Image (cartoon, rainbow, N blue to C red; front, side, top):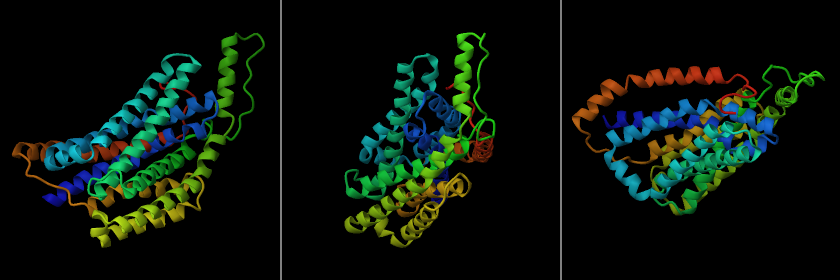
Length: 337
């Protein structure tokens, strides 16, 4: 029963990392990939509404911790308190930026919420990385190992976002260029503005090209961060070192995947290698940390076994369908942009 509970929790967290890595990573890279108002609208359209479905996995993981790991809940609250403040703060800031950005047609308003999207995404990635480092290091958040883990995990999220952006930010019409969209001379000023926005948003694949090229650089940064994390763990010790054989296998997979991605450009294989890479941190925690499992009430076990467990395959199928549907080029604008 213990191993089933751990696998159930690890599966939910891995699902969140792999799927949410797309929108969190793209939000982190927004200032780099989007230099014009049209570009920023396009990035927001690429992120939304994808983020709405991926958050289900995080909510499910929190519910499993509360129901099946009450001792872990207490331990996390005590040892990782700052992370539990940073994580929801980043989550709220990023989501608020996505929801409110398009509500007012003002450059200052857009700049405010664009900043919220970027900062919130970085806070989310760093806080998740700090949680991974803290759990692998016995709850210490200020150690060099935990800090190195935080930046490495953030780089993995950025890598996932770059690979996602390389396929999501291609021209909406499926062609590298459409020429210049011009409104007739007799058209109203508003029509001219719409034509300019449309042309600037769809007549170039530059955003996708930049994202594709970034996968190489970010993979190298993440590989360097992983090396620093391993060195810091070797010097300071910790839970991951105590279970060295298991941790070594998982870290070796990460290193191999990142080394392969460092020579790739574009969404093809990077789409898959980035998914494997960002799945490694939660798997490492599940394999190297002995999670405190306390006996859950019978009613909780019944609810999880007969009510929640059958929902997981439906969630998985729905997320795969959503991901495949939203791999298509993002629209020029929409409800969120």
